Image 1 (cartoon, helix red, strand yellow):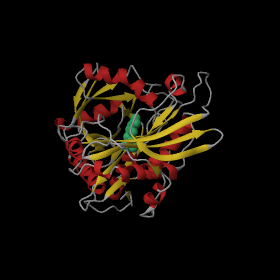
Image 2 (tube, protein in one colour):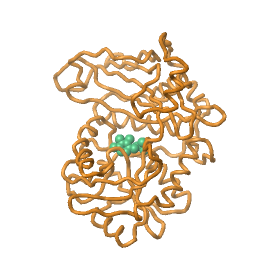
Image 3 (spheres, protein in one colour):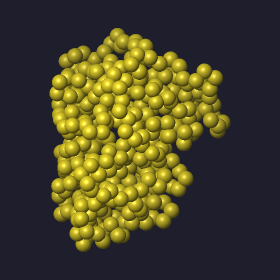
Length: 377
Ligand SMILES: *Cc1c(COP(=O)(O)O)cnc(C)c1O
């Protein structure tokens, strides 16, 4: 996927697109007191706000019923295709509270475009970009009291779509549902910024050539779990997958992209071969590094040469990045064959600087030269 170049957007765009959604308020919302507790100490992905956005698609009618409704169980037929054949895709982005009380999102237009690419790969209908932006804008506006105010705490937004037609033959669906739910979240790694250890998994793959690696779909995650748990059994916090075809090149973590910093100051990151999810954080880090005059090389990173470069000091820092964890230092690579620490297991200076810069833009603490932030309300 090519991420769109500069998109100087209208600052009121999200509000006008959100107006297409009708709002049915929850008559039993969580109390103000309980909500205050929940957003002060959120457990990632366990608590959800009072409302959700919802739209319906049928082959004949297209997209309809743009609505915000009370959060609650979906009414789904047991024969719904998604339950059998996993026709599903999703997105993940965050709503940020700024010091003046306003609420913002980071590059939601890029998530909207990626959602269309994922849907296309899964043979699902493509949601118009304006409906994606309108749905997240309408939900976040309705739930603005759910956006945590503590620094680095956010309202995590999860749009998703699935094939809902009750039909267990295998073909493109005639019915789909699109929903957006919201979950208050704190820093992804509760221990603060400290390097994680990575299991290099070369037995089980999350995807392969011509597969769904570039699509953000549940199936990739289902396929990644055995590898994730092999990593945990070996005492690692995260897993990095290698390419299925040659078992030679590092691709990405279960849900994060990866960068290596070389001693001359340039960065390398695995190229988007189709096996790799084109992260919006990855794309943003490339832009920020280039803003600082650094070269960023998108290339195939061989595991053996990376390990040699780490051992020799040619590579000084390695980090992972994604919306949930922003930028996370990698302190160690482990497998059945090796155990190599990076930068003495310490957080590198550039890793920390890039993390602070990206977070600073997202929190409205420093200038946003690329017009990445979209005001919600
Ligand atoms: C979502 C995701 C990422 C990170 O993408 P961001 O847009 O930066 O959040 C990386 N890898 C996988 C497999 C993902 O699903």
